[in-house]
Image (cartoon, rainbow, N blue to C red):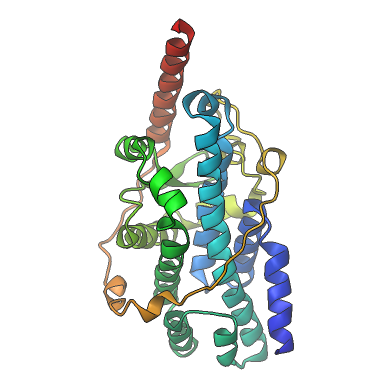
Amino acid sequence: MHWKMKQIRRKVEKANIDNVSRTIMYERFYQQNPEIRWSLLAGLVSRNAGWNMTDLESKWFQQLLTQKYRDLLFHTYERANWTIFQDVYPQLLWYEYAKTKKEPQFELLDYLGVSKFMQTEWKYFWKSRNEERLCTALIVNEQYTIEEVVMKQPLYKENVFSSIIYFLEEHAHMSYVIFPTTMGRVYGLYVRNFKHVKARIWLGRQLSSLLFHPIIHEEIYKFSICTVPTGSRRDYEQYMGWSTGNTSPRLREQYPVITHHWYNKKDWSLQESETEQFFSTLPTLRPTERTKWLQRKWAELYVLQKVKDLSVGRK
């Protein structure tokens, strides 16, 4: 085996420990390789996953959801988070090595189990330097990668994505991805139709467009540089001058390290040929501040858990 492959695999194993380590690696990689936009997007989305994980053990969610369902949701987030990192971080390390050597050695991508789709896209990027297209390609790749491993797995499909709780949450717009700033403002988008791969790709592309919009990009990037990820919503609440009153534990104080396995990894792109559709031009997305909207959503959650608390008290 090529010595570099062994080194890459060791680095991936060391880095793919938990949500916090993944977030750090994504954002650190972007700082050193800002042409790979997807890495910053992945870091900020990973922060959102961390906040959602620790929310499950907050005071409010302990009241709203059973321990069994909270555990299942945590494992859903964790498995998707781990799977994406396991697939893409070797690609990022390969690119960093190729850039240093000024020699791509594309054959290494095949040995690393990279999809044929991404092998083609990396080759195109090496010649074109089209940063936006590569970011879109990585979004497409990550969403198809988790489609079989997470979204269609019976454990998650039947018990999470087909549950009435998931349905109500999505239709009440309780699911969202936010980009905070050190100025206390937040930006973001609703998560709709998360069960559908094309909808997730569309969302990812819109989030990328929002993140790299010249009006707000520097604000959000400053947050990522200045704020060490802990998985707690305190990471961004500290800049907002107000708090929900809910608890928000740190991820490493709440959850143990989870061991994952990925047997018989398959190349999704061998069955999906209609991928060029995902590179169409997006409508211009003007940044909309979501701070007050986020406050309203938290207020709604507060009322929900109070109503649940009262109903339990009457029994």
